[in-house]
Image (tube, rainbow, N blue to C red):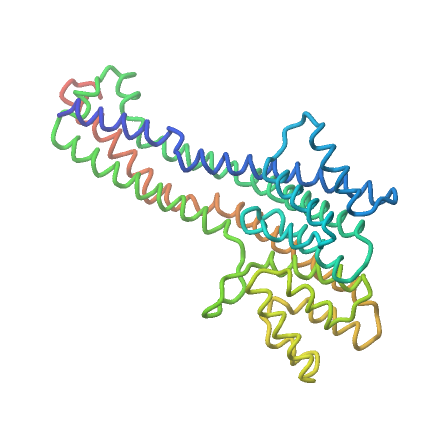
Length: 372
């Protein structure tokens, strides 16, 4: 029986440290996302340089497609397919924004590009500033993701160390000359092992939940019948609103344009605000139909309406504050998560270590006189 339990412990240890299919899939997806961002940013930078040199959008996209074909660097095939579709649309005389937007559900990185491109085509303003803004947004989002990964690396390492504690019985037993069969051969040692492994499994589940909860993006207030939206979605919409305002469009028209290119929940809220304006309800009443997370944007627009200030700059500042506050919140939450891991360490992993290692060693060594 002791050998069976020891083999079970080794199998569980191997399972704990062996790379999971889900974990490997997540790492592959993260690597694909990074490659995709690099590929998309390179394409957009090429388009922006061509636009700055005086080429038309059609010519700029043609050059980007050709450069992509000639490049030997690692690229994302999905971005190439979307770019080819944009090229075909522009050659037909159709707008390019819908071609970007069609794939934004499968490729989330395209949402910012699709929104900025569509807003520019709708307003008739220059495309170059919008493309450069899209590149900056892509780079910043990736940098924020990397900073968050660096903060959580220590927490993840702590989790792995805690998980190794209950699995230390066999190697420690071998070091003191107690083989696995003898270590877990008695009934009390076997019971202690089973209970200890159960505690360790509970601790692992709790640790993962704590970390996952800490890294969840902050959602705006839930509303029945509508999908969730995050504070990042609000920040992206605010930054796109400043693009529309910079083109010279009015406040109501700009909000309406941003609503068209936003996710469903954001689109619904912005359309309520537009309806409030058009019903003549006044600025504050119109924005009362949106979630409270829009308050910085509403305040920035109120400043413009009351004092005649240019709205684009104040709305841009509000959007940047929203984005920075969410990044800071996530980094602080990731830092606190390492402290919260003391709870499963004390409640689950240390008792599990005692049950799977200390108690079986005592039971095995006492008859030998090994403790004296």
